Length: 530
Image (cartoon, rainbow, N blue to C red; front, side, top):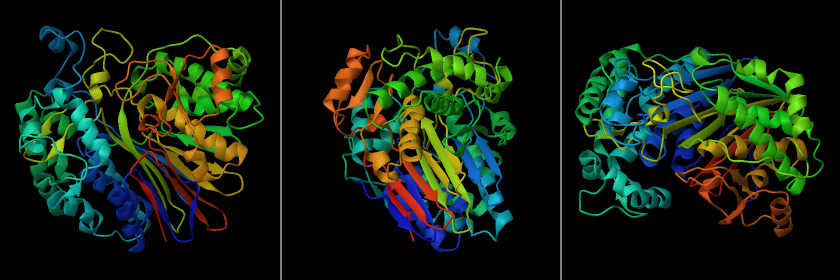
């Protein structure tokens, strides 16, 4: 898939074709990009439950036609009545990845939907909530076809997941796991969505839905309590920004790794690479990634506990000059450093009024904590499994603290009037895929779809792998791979197209009114346009 889709009225993209169609339907009804993304997000909860859900977190990056850029930080904090000592007293040396004690942070996703729709209503009369959630309700009630990725991850992770009796009842009630193409229904999720239509999205936290969630979480052994639901609120911090390639590029601030995504681009620009996709290009981006990750790993988390300011780091020209000067154009810097994991969904939309949205939503691991909540049909995230139990450690478990997030949506405003929203799933790979996409398109003029389809690389681990090698899709030129190995990179060849490299997408609105979009052939997604 190399053709960039074009239109003149509006455009969406997501990692599942049904979600993209949900977003497009909203645009066709006259809805805003904010409403379209909410519809896509809801549909993804129904048809892509291994990657996202209402029991997770989300970050929104919104560009308004008047030049404003806004972040909606819809992520939850650690349980207010839990402590690291609770885990150590139970015999844990780290927060478990699965089970009730992994479900230790509030879910922010639905609060993000609510905040986004409030902003949409301030721009123009709102569509009814039942119209926005219509497709999600239909697929949850009547069924969706399991994707290959959901079925394969179910099979791969069944030992971790089926120990949860509610999960096993929801996914293996017939004594076997569903296969790709099987029709799966989630009537409890349909009823939850319908309840939100009746009583408002706020009822997820303080109404009947919230009470059901809390009852099932408590039964599963989660430390979350009613106060956590009542205390949660969306934050609106200032977006991070950096000047790169004739554009102002934006990303989400800590606790996300958005600073790393912008730092890679700033460093790469200073290295003055002259051609795309050759040895110098890949080597420079990989080395820039290492420096960006070293800052991220040392400093990024809940900003209330950070010792360095992320925007101050990005604005420190002398520091970036020194980092760029330290990069050897012929030799790889020794690696590894600690990696971050996580699976997620990114989606984007731009409407005819010029509102542009880059949004990312996640359960963290595939199927999150594995805690299925039977009264509501939700899976709860395990984002708090990234907390450390050592007092004073980076990202230490503290009641009310927000965990470090791999999630980071990206957006760029070009000097020529283009506005671009882009992003990807993929934990550790998110900043790397963003860098490949943006540099190919913005610096070297590679067409948008080609920039996403072209072979990608991943330094470090994702999808549960503990390998720290430089993984490269086998479609890369053999000579480029050989030169990277000669330079000291530990190269691991992987499949020609693999979800390991993320599910990227992008939409660009040109000053002329032309829309241009792309989706990732590694995903189940597509562009929706009219």
